[in-house]
Length: 137
Image (cartoon, rainbow, N blue to C red; front, side):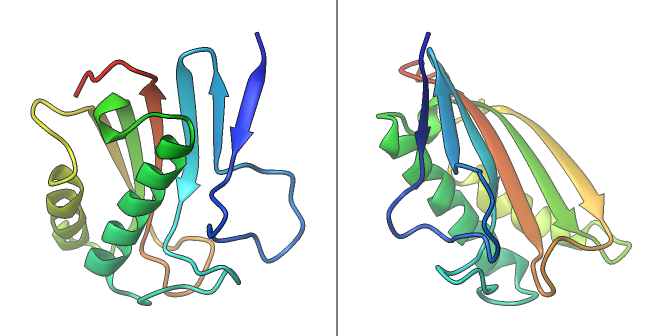
């Protein structure tokens, strides 16, 4: 079975040359790598603003899925990595935004608090797994 790779044309890029794709499809399974609120040059958009960054990340995930002919309705699992300052405030803010992108009952979800992400000012990174054409959510 072939493996397909896709990265949207206007998608953010790594600041160094790395062999990664935004998304990979194997059969009906689509894996969206960790999406972040970065611009084309790899600079953080809306530093330290978890709400604005969550919207950008969810739109990035939707764009990668669209490249495979899928949508957020096909997502069966998301994993969220977020910067926590010791409270659950950041999680509540981002979870509320993320939840608005899905229909009930929604995908399985995991949230992992961290002291920092790869870029200063980056508050959230989300990866997703989808089943093409499932419309499971």
